[in-house]
Image 1 (cartoon, rainbow, N blue to C red):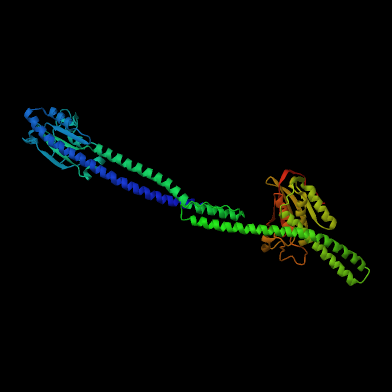
Image 2: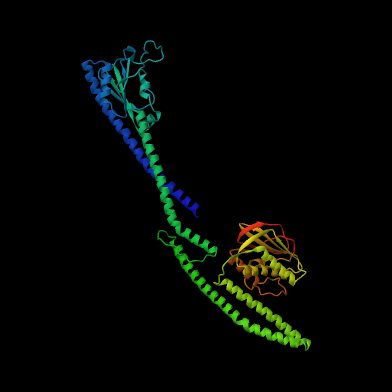
Amino acid sequence: MFDSFARRVTAWYVVAATAMVVGLFGAVALVVLIAYVHMVQDGIDADAREAQSFSVRSALRRDTFPAAAVEIEQRLARPGVRMVAAGPFPHPSDGPRPATPRATSAPLLMRAAPGTPVPPAPPGSGDRLRVPEYVFVNGVRVYEDPRDARTRGSRIGFALATALGAHFQHVDLLDGELRITPDPDATQNVALWLLLGVLVAGAIAAVLAWLSGRYITSQVLRPLVDVTHALRRFATRDFTPQPIAVAGKSDFDEIAVAYNAAAAQVATAFAERQAAESQMRQFVADAGHELRTPLTIVLGYIDLLRRKADEGDERSRRIFASIGIEGARMRTLIDNLVLLARMEGDDVRPLEPFELCPLLEEIVDSRRLLKPGLEIALDCRVEATVIGDRSELHEAISNVLDNAIKYAPGTPIRIATDSYDGGVEVTVADRGPGIDPEDRQAIFDRFYRGATRGEIEGSGLGLAIAKRAVERAGGTLALVESASPGTTFAFRLRADRVRAREPLANR
């Protein structure tokens, strides 16, 4: 619930936080990289000045080029700096060497600068390489072209150093040269470590932003989630008051406060309604009990007068017969009201197991005796031991069957049993005109009678009593939708033992 919205909000929060952290740390990393390159360049410039002084001293001492190259490179060695000494250049074609050592600064390039002397190839190597006699890199002799030694390493490091303003220093050393440049591998390693730091900081920021975003959105949306849960509970007709705690961490808390107030009003209204209904049920039960005795006495006197009227004129007989019919209807109505009031009240009877098929046979046999021509088929495909009050379930099934007899006269009626989800299902189906769609939602309401009832007598309490009786036994009663003409009601009851048996013949 609201998870999609919370994820979207959190995702935007993570993107914004990560972008901000990566941008900030990226700027810091760029500044650090620029500072590193400038620091290396300062070291190169300082080394170039020291190399010029050393070259003069070496010339006065008449040092050999290898000894001077190794000494100066080891003395000036520092991290991030590459020194390549090449010499001597013995061929006159290379031009005279300057009497005084000079230092030349130029931009750092990927290849050798134009005009760089190309030394002859060593003996036995043909024309493949023309290198000086000695090439030293950071005080270690190598056997390769000095141009390759200068440009060996990461091209990314060269590019970064060039872009950030680095340049090399060229110093004449005796009858050779010394070139001091930034080490491209060191520059690349520093850049990679800084990039890794930016990525790690971005990842940590993303994780922290996700966790904090989920926490913040959950706290902000908590009132909406709680109110939605409570409204869904209301939709299931559970009106038990359960106030929502208000933590004061979100502007949505006002919704929870409003819901609590509305829920309190609803709970109060339902409590008043339940009290009124309880009083009404008590009144109906008390009135029914009080009316039964005088009604029985009145009906007794009416029956006595009717017998005497049988000896008189026809008009008197019809009057007393009508009084007797209406009195019987009144007694039935009072009995049903008292029964329904008892079922809806606190009168709970112990549930005891009983066999279902004998109960159905008893109900069907009693109706066949009253109406010998009645077509009722009983199909007990399964036998079951039902858990419930036998008299109440007898009343429920009888009421549904009596409705089928009244509203579908002359049509066959079928009662069948079957297993259902660990219990048993009893269906009562007729071939009558059916129930109009607009009446189906209210057929279990008290005193409700459909628009097609015609002149059929009834109080509108039979299905209400049946539904309440089944619910007291832990079952359900429902109208089964069917495309064929007729009406089918399904009782679904709890049962301990459900077992198949051969279908019973119509009785």
